[in-house]
Amino acid sequence: MKRLFALCLAFALCAVPMTAWAAPAWPSGVTIQADGGIVMEAGTGTVLYGKNMDHPYYPASITKILTALIVIESCDLNEIVTFSHDAVYNVEEDSSSAGIDEGDQLTVRDCLYALLLASANESANALAEHVSGTREAFADLMNQRAASLGCTGSHFANPSGLNDENHYTTAHDMARIAQAAIQNPTFVEICSSRTYRLPNMKRAPVEKYPDGFPIANHHKMWNRNDAAYYNGAFCGKTGYTSLAGNTLVTCAKRGDMTLIAVVLNGHLTHYTDTKAMLDFGFGNFQSLKISEFETTYTSLDNDMTIAGMTAKDTISLDLDEDSRIVIPKSAGFSDAVPHLSYTLDRNAPSNAIAQVNYTYGDQPVGRSYLLLGGVGGADGSGQAADSSNANNAGPASDGSNGSNSGGQAADGSNGNGSNGGPAPDGSNANNAIPSPDGSNANSASPASDGSNADSGSGASGLIPPGGGGGKPGGGSPNTATSFKIPSNLAAVLGIAASLAVITAIIVAVKLYVRRRQEAMALQRRQRRIQRLEDIGYSTAEFERIMEQYRSSTTSSYTPPGKRSRRKRFPFRRS
Image 1 (tube, rainbow, N blue to C red):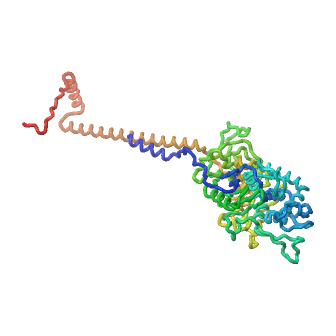
Image 2 (image 1 turned 60 degrees about the horizontal axis):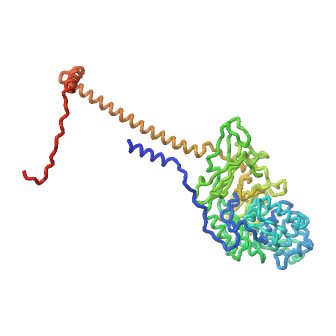
Image 3 (image 1 turned 90 degrees about the vertical axis):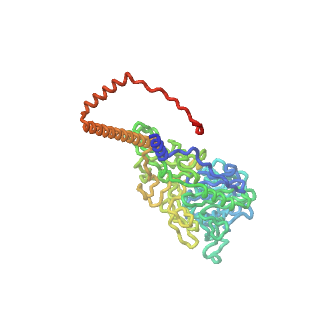
């Protein structure tokens, strides 16, 4: 019996999931030569590695990422920009230029291509004047937008990034700015293009350049013909000044993860530093869909209060289906610790009642919203109230670009945007951020907004592929999966069920042994009765004789004395 009980107990303990004693350590082992750097996962804002990431450095031309984002959010792409004398000539000598002259008139779209591909400083000045009237006023707008993105260590003094002691940023802040920029499909379309032709320029007459003046992207990591090519890289910006050194922002996507790498004050190793950080991120981390693993949050009893609202009946809660966490590949989902908060950020869907923030040790790794089941968003579509960040595309690694349908948000920012930019062969891809093999994956790019990026913002504001609607495959960001059993309760129930099985087995064994003993005793009694009948006695007579025998022997019986045994030596003489 003891052996059987031990075997059953061992089986039960093996069947019940056990909690790990300690989560695996956060991966390390990457080094860069630049003074400052960071690699951040774009969908969650999780910082995978950082070196002096909150220390201020001069950014140089990567400043133009913020300039482009503000212009796209503020202007129609077909507006005409007239280049003033100050815009063209108030730049440092030998600084980057697209050859645009005073009096040239280009569309905002043309100016953005000159800004992001040729890093044209005159285009940055002209766009700033077009939006705000002066570069100083535009710089104020840049600082306001950066603050809205959670930047805490930056100050911008001009739209181009030319040397200024009051113009600086941090690697972490630049990652946040890039995170917001790749949410905008127009930005990704322009930034990921490898070449473009600028029309109607005095220095590029139609007779000499009938198709427009050619410009090329300075970033090398998505140029397949360059040694610095990186599989999955699709967007970014280069920079250099004598004070800033080499600066570089690179976005790359593989599988379910989009990474942003930033290098500040590099020393001619900005591409190798970026590759080292991207390899580290893709090689050591994984992105997990929260709704596929989380089992803690479920229906609540009617005596519980949620965000000040008392439930009259049992409430069905769903988890935002698009939200993810990023953790080491050696870790499991249970190693991330959830923290329930009733403070919602501006991207929260209208039917969100709380959000769950996840940490891995002290590191924020993602978040999800708790949604009232069956309730749509503010417009009935299940979309977040802030529609400025919708289904945002990114290009394939071969240079082709994503495509999204939809219009423009009320604040002027692009919502779902237009078709992605042309691939080198002129074709357009009709998908979102690319898969690592160069084809386009049909998924949205990571969420980013005015909330603090390092709090682990998710991508819940995006519309997944397939369009609108709240049904699976319909593309609603609030499509969710309901859960009914908390993990701790499941463990308790599992242990209870195992103990119940063990108890049932023990009881069954005892009943079997008892019945077998009773059957054997009955067989012996029947055999005894048969023998008595064979010699002419009845059962009653035999029992009377036995009783008399026991009575007569009880009083006179004395136990025999102990007999001593003398050991005999084996070789004793007889």
